[in-house]
Image (cartoon, rainbow, N blue to C red; front, side, top):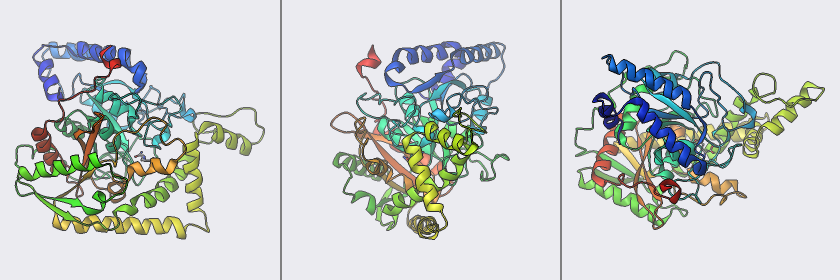
Length: 487
Ligand code: GLN
């Protein structure tokens, strides 16, 4: 059910907030031993807050938009008084002394924190397998990964363990897991949403966004979390539209671009391609004009990202030194060896790999050859998009070249894992808003995701087209029904 439907039931008294929370928490208890979407379940506090909301409602108070709605939060967003681990041994016992702006806004809007969700360590990965606390599994097929890095949030929404969730997207970490788990996932324009209290991975790319079961819910959550924040100097001071304002407007005459380079990939799964092209036809039948165009630098996104993101990560992760935060390896006499062993034992392999690559790319002799060059290519990629948006209103691609892959499939091959973000990374490099929504299933019954990329600050346009597609295609009424969900 959509948030609006839950809200209606709550307002009409068909259901109390406490009942709604209890329903979700008992589902988590039943199902999550198998999925491992959650690292922490916030049972007592969620129930206590739900009771307060019920009392307020009973006394006739008018309540904000998300009052009583159970929401899960990726465990790289700081929640005051509750652990924030980033799925890393480094922060295993870290309790943030402050609340992130996005979560603060959700709680002010009446949302209830049901729990913190699993992720790839420090959001580095595409499968949620690099979590130091064990992988999350895909609710559609538990032999498969849920995608990543926000795999816990995606799996939680797909399995009905919460109504909505937040994730973060640096190179695709909201959209790719949304696509693997058959839910809606949105990355807003860079700067649309505050990063205050989001543990930094690559600061020029990171954005927080929603996971929901339908497009109108994505608009609702975005409405609450978006907007200027004096605590984040990169957060934009632009007027906030009503993100659902265009839902009632037909998409007649809108121009939608198919990026040639995306559809001629070697690694693009046939069923994914077919399903996404069918979605384009559907949009055409709704009156949109489909235009094929070229973004020549699109496929350079991966190489560019894997220089820039590790470079920024190597700087951001320097703060975990055994002194300021979290884990510290005891017993060493010198500060230097304490720090070195703390970092070697506190970070997992993937995080160490990124720190090494980043440090190398930023070092004096290589800076120009790698980092500076990557920044130049980043500009070229943005320029391609600028040119594309002179011809079309938005762009359409598959979200990921494949459906959910087997757990362990890329264990020995980090490069193969990196390729799963081929189609999502360019939007991060250019700071553009993008959304993934389900558009079909492969022959194994695994969800396929469609990506729409919009021009800067045009979230309303993206949501409009996504909404019309969702209404027309009706893919969303299917749900995962593995044995572990029925049991
Ligand atoms: N999978 C990509 C990476 O490993 C993107 C991660 C993200 O968006 N946080 O870096």
